[in-house]
Amino acid sequence: MLKNKINLYLITYAINSILRQKGKNSFIIVIFTLLTFLLSSIFFITGSIKYELDTTVDSLPQIIVQKIKAGKAYDIDIDAVDNILEISGVSDAMARVWGYYYFVNGGVNFTVVGLDQYENQYKKTFNSIIKKYDLTSLEQNSSMIVGTGVKDVMTKSYYDKYFNFIKPNGSFKRLYIGGVFHSDTELESNDMIILSKDDARDLFGIDENMATDIVVKVANPKEIPTIVQKIKLLYPDTRIITNEDLKVSYANIFDYKSGVFLAIFIVALFTFFMVIYDKSSGLSAQEKKEIGILKAIGWTIDDVLKEKFYESFIISVLAYLFGIILAFIFVYIFQAPLLENIFIGYSKLKTTFELPFVFDFQTLFLVFFLSVPIYIAATIIPAWRIATLEADEVIR
Amino acid sequence: MIRLENIIKKYTINKNNTVTALNNINLEFKEGQLVVLKGSSGSGKSTILSLIAALSKPTSGQVIVDNKQISKLPDNFAALYRRDNIGFIFQKYNLIPTLSVQENILLPLVPSNLDEKEVEEKLNLVMDKFQILHKKDAIVRNLSGGEQQRVAIARAHVNNPKIIIADEPTANLDEKLSRDFIQILKELKETNKTIIVATHDPLFFNLDFVDQTVCIDRGNLQ
Image (tube, rainbow over all chains, first blue to last red; front, top):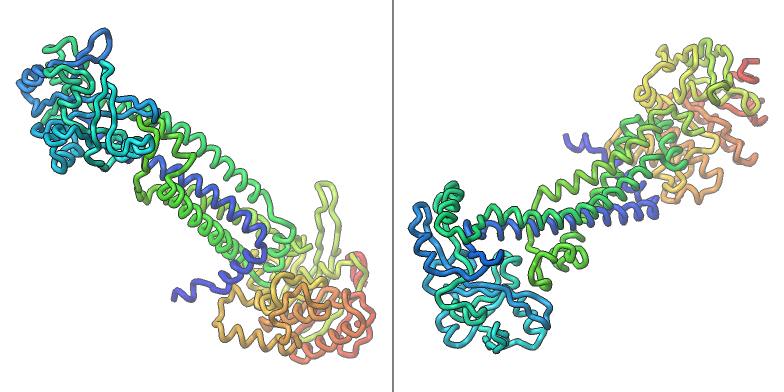
C-alpha cells in the first residue's frame, strides 16, 4: 500500500536533480547548516544557562536576614537565630559565615563558605559535602574543600596543595586543599571554597558570636511575607531578602544576557530570510525550462511540486541535521567558545564554566520549524508559479 | 480523430501589443494519418502542435481529440491527456542535458509509478527500437545531434502514445540523419500512430506515405 503511495522514481529524480547542481546546492547546504548551527547553538546555550539558573534559584534560601550598618551589610549577632526560631511558621534558621575572597593573581573572586558539621545545611550540595568530608578533621588539618573551578585556578598559580589567604589584619592563613567537589549546578559550585565555620570566621575576621547573615526556612511558602514582617518588627535594623527577590535579580541578569543573544539570533534569522527571499524570488532559466519540459511530457503540477518538495526536503533536513550535530559538538563538547563568553560574565569565577547537557525536544522542533518549512516553501512557491503557466509559454 | 474548429490564437506581447498566431483555423486529421504542416518560420505551425498537445489553450475555438474537447481541460487533466496520448518531439529536442539517455527516456513514466520490471521492459524496448540502447548510460549533452534526436523520439514513444507530434524535427540534422528520421516516422506510421510533423524541410514534401499536407502562412491556411 505504502509502496504505491511513495513514488521512488520521483525521489530518485529529486536526488539526481540535487546532484546535477552540486555547486549551487552545496552552497545552500553550507549556508543553511551554518544558520541552523547558529540558531541551535544559541538555543542550546540559553537552555543550559537557564537550567543552571533555575537550579541555582531553586536552591536559594527562602529568607536571608542581613544586618545593615551605614547602608552596607554587616555581621549579625548569632543570638538572633534563637529569636527568629521562636516565630511561628519558621521551621529552621541558620547563621551563615561566608564571603568573597579576591585572588589577585587569578583575577577572580572565590566564594568562601563556612560550614558546621553538626548543623542543618541550607543547600543539598552542602549536605553531600558534609557526608563525604569530616569538617572537624579538616579544621584540625587546616584544610578546605574547593570547587573544580577554584582548583583549576589555584593549580594554574602553582597552589596545587595549599593556598595562602591574606586576612583583614594583613597576616596569612594557609589552608590545604583537602578535596574537590562538583555539584549539579556549575554556577553555584564552580567558584566555591568550603571550610569550617571557625576557619571562615578567622579568614574574614568575624567575631566568634557573629555571622555574615541568617537564613530562614519556612514550612509554608505562602507565609513568607508574614514572617518577613515579623522579623522586620523584631530587628528593624536588618534587610530581609526573600528568594523571590533573588529570582528577580537573577532573571534580570539572565534577561540582559539573553538580550545579547537575541540580537545574534535576529541577525541569524535576518540572514536566513535574505537567502530565502533571494531563492524565492525566482528560478534560473534552466530550472524554468526543465519544469516546462516535464509538464510537456505529461507531469502534472502536483508531480512537479512533489519533486520540488522532495528536493528541498532532502536539502533542508540534511542541513538541519548537520547544523544540529555541529551545534551539539560545539556547545557540549567544545563548550561553545566565543559564544559562551557573552554569558560567563555572570559567574564570579570567569574561567572553566561548563555548560550542562540539556536535551530539549522543544528546542529541536523550534529550530526545525524556523528553518525547514520556510526553505521548502521558498523552493515550492517559485516552482508552483512556473508550473501553473502554460507549458508552451515556459518552453518557448 | 483530431479536429480544430474555428481556432484563433493570440499571444500577448505586452499591454498594448498582441500577435495573432492562428486566424480562424479549421482542420481535421484522421487516426493513423501522417500529416505534414508546411510553412515558413512564424507561420503558426508550432502553435497548432501546441494546441493539439494541450500545451497551450486557444484564444477561441476548440480542439477535439477522439470526440473530447481538450482545449478547455484544466491544467492537471491536460497533463494527464499528454501523458496518455501525446509523444512530443521538439525542434531542439528539449532533453535534460545533464541526465543520462535512460533517465531522460524514463521521465514520462515517472509520475505513473509503475512496477520496476515494467519500466525496465518499456525502456529497453524503446531504446532498442530507436538504436540508443548501447548509449543508455551516456550523459545526453555528450551525444551527437542524431543521437539526441533518437533519445527524444524514444522519450516521445515510451508511453506508447496514439499521437506523435514533431516540431521541425530535422532542423538540426544533416541530410542523412534527416532521411533516417523519416524512415523512423514511416515505421511509426505502420503501427497506426497519428503523426503530425511541422516542418519547412523539403525532404518531407514528396513522401509517398504522407497522407495530408497542410500549408500555413501567417496564421492562415493556404
